[in-house]
Length: 170
Image (cartoon, rainbow, N blue to C red; front, top):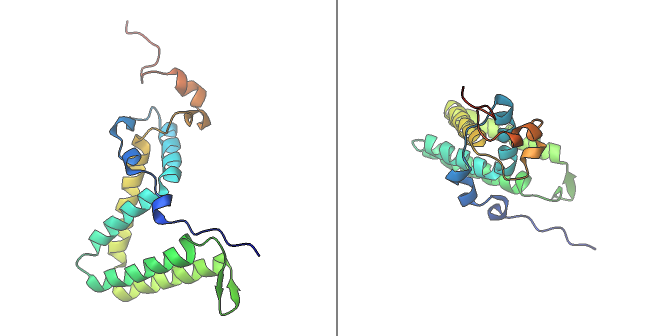
C-alpha cells in the first residue's frame, strides 16, 4: 500500500515575493502580442501570488460587512481543503466524489453565500480590480531569460534591442 503524496502548502505554491516585486524586471512590451504572451506566462507563473492579491482586495472590499467576511472565510477554507490543495479524490462516508462534483458543489455554495450575504456586487468589483492588477503586472513584467523563445515572435524580438529596432535616425 503506497502512501498518498503530501498536500502542498500555500507557502510552497507561491513564488518568492522579491521576484514578483522586482522593479528591474518591469519593462514596456514591444507589441500587443508580446503583452498577451507576457500576461499568459506571468499568470501561469505567479498564479497563487495573483490569487492572494485578489483575495486581499476582496477582504478590503468586505471590511464593512463582518458577517460576509466570516462567511467567505469559511467558504475559502472549504475551497482550499476540498479542491485547491487536494491531490487525491475526496472520500466521504466510503463514497469517492469526483473532482467535478466537488467543483459544482463548491460553486453552488459560493453562489448561495453571495446571494444570502447580498454582497455579490462588491465581490464582482473586487475580483475585477484584482484581474486588472494581475493583467497590468503581467504585461509589464518581462518573463525570465529563456522564456522569450516560446513566444511566436521570440526569434524576432531577441534581435531587437530597442523599440526603434536597428534603425538609425536620418
